Length: 453
Length: 60
Image (cartoon, rainbow over all chains, first blue to last red; front, side, top):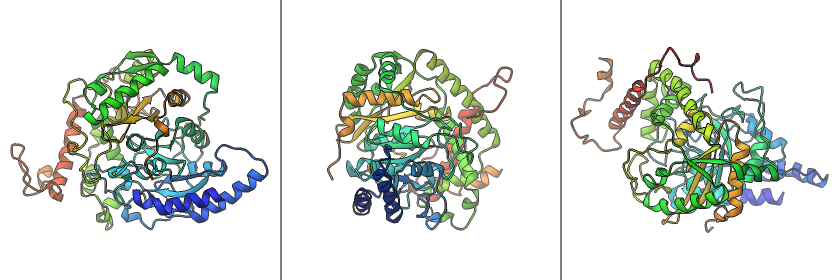
């Protein structure tokens, strides 16, 4: 009970500093904490029992509105728990807050970090910098110590970007590993729900609780997740073959991020030394993924787009993007879907010679909250123009192929903002990804750093 | 013809620099449409052999 009360107090007091909180759920949290206390008295021992967490406000939960971060839905009440939240409840976890997000998960292509009902997500490492999107509140709340872990979601980069910018560990599961029942749909074929936490092991604990079959989600694979035991993890890390393209950092990292990223890769090589060069083929990953989610998202939100409340959305560019996406041609959407097979085939070729692909989480550090997201960096200097794309399209490509990824911090840029790395593996390779990131985190202390309160 | 009617009156031709404010809604609408078209062009450049491609559209 005390932990739940302290967490709710902290969320209410500090949450607004980061624009991280949509709703503090004190009543529900205390009721769940009471049940957890009773279980603890009965000597029940489960890793998440009584531990408060926050959920991105794209997930329905009893006891609070589900706003999807968007003014037109500010009063929306969905009187049910999303499957991921129901599973955490069964594991004894305590839902303390719905966390802020970019409106409609940013599917129209927003221009400013302010594209949210709660305002721009502020980064606990520097509140004048963005916390990333679209799981802005999840990243900030974990980084700021408001909750031990949070649920986020990713269509293309929405767990990875806030994890990298806020210096937390985020796990994007394989498509279909975690049920999306009760989650706002932006893209039926891309959306994934995943944990964001202080370290890889915690992500694994949360993933184990939320993964698995769900009759309410026809796209759920039915597969479960179990972390490797200590001995199996050590052996897997030792023999893991890591694909890496040096130009990801050499040619693309900003001046602020470059040194820390290079040091992070060097540290990782000591943990998993079998590195080999491998890069994805030159495919238009960005146009592919944005065509898919824009076409699906605008169809999902067509009634809103053509209705009276559409203008209430915050971001003008997002509105323009949603409107125009209604006119994406079937020919182009289907061409994108066909090409996803080519993306999967390209990964399959790499995974013949490597177990995982490593790249940067983001090539830059968090941008200022007032900076347009489609403009060259003010503090994040422009990456060098290059003809070597390396694996910089890995976030888009990995999402197109439905592959899992883990994002974890590896230090700080010269502007004192976090930077991180990502690992992508074949479908359902989460046990290896967690084992590798966990081994790195046992050998380093970047993930233990906390911003000043 | 339909494409032309969607563009705002002041939309610049490709050769002209857009002098409208960067957050002007009409400019943003034109930019959004240009992005969709650019993406479509990129996707159409990718050639797939219908003789050998897998028998279904992508299933995640």
